[in-house]
Length: 271
Length: 271
Image 1 (spheres, each protein chain N blue to C red):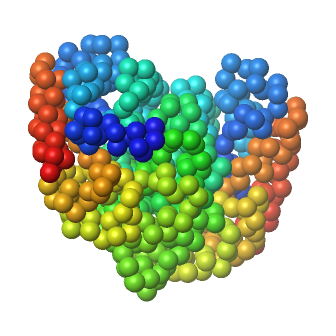
Image 2 (image 1 turned 30 degrees about the vertical axis):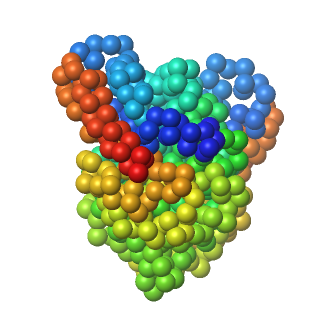
């Protein structure tokens, strides 16, 4: 999918919500466990209940790999379901991959060719040749970690590197990489004021923003400092939507939570 | 496996060689492709031909994920084969994972419980809470990226962070994390003199060293600056061994290459 198509979808749906499909089988309603592929059944129910309220879905690969071969199969079925039924959805493999060049190419093939995701999250630590292979695929995107929403973000990402915070160095450096226009960035919502400085460096890029809701960030604040002319934001919510109810009404309750966020987004977009 | 057991194996086999099982089906002999699971068959042949010459095997997950579900199955069969036939071997899932805490726990379960690897490589960018979950498992290890062997290593890892190179900050900071004694580090062999400074920070830790051979590093130099009283080094070779021949004699030729390295190691150990 092109960035332009994503922007069109945002305007059409009046939403820039991304739903994280991080299925933990200890948290899903018991009757789901009776299905042959409970992870896929749970995802399918969530997708069917929220499809008109969001523009992106983001399975985190850890939650699938933890269930081994069966988990990888659930991931495959989930992305196939999205590709076939909802090709207008922007799909994100939240995998945080990154390795030396020829190895990153293998990861890119895994997520862009074998699974046909629109994008994959990548880690910057190994530098240019670990990320550029992800940018060689037409209409595919790499979403690189810049400033994350966890406590550990302050261990290295905010370290002063030659006069500025490391995450700013990461953003600036990556702008010079080949096909950098296909890069998006992960920026946690825990400190909305960081977005001002980030927008000075990457005014046009899309930012994937975790940490709104469950992790404490405010949607209004993030939009105030982070939104650009093309919206430029994908706000992720996972647990707050997926586990809104542990009962048989989990999908309805997930819709209620997603709707709340979508309505707040619609209000922001109308301004 | 405990570090002590690994050291014992090194002395027993007179080798600290790790063989990277990075199977690229475009590079294996044609007859291998006729098997139902060519990746596993290739690995099995390599393992059978080199098992007495090395102490560790390291499949890089990218090369399995690229083949989708079948690839994940090949990875599973490979680790099962090693666990059943060669429990004395130290196994490394070269996955370079790392995410927020609850997600890293899922990755740790995937590699330590579902697949039963002894260790997994992790990326430091997201800090303490992204790595500590990997250190909570008994007799399991996280091998964290410090200074890698690719060109991109010089984009961020060697940046001056508050007065010293970022990779040194990573090493120092991680020493204070919970269960830090289970940490090992990835240190590329491209500049052997870096090992002196690294050993000042982590004198006792095991270092996993890629980049000897194909990527240009010298074994003698690495050992001169990087070896400690417990040896403390695992030297990885992948392509130089796996693809020593593209013919039917690939396993024999792989053994010849592994033997060369093992003999050089035996000489170094005897000093």
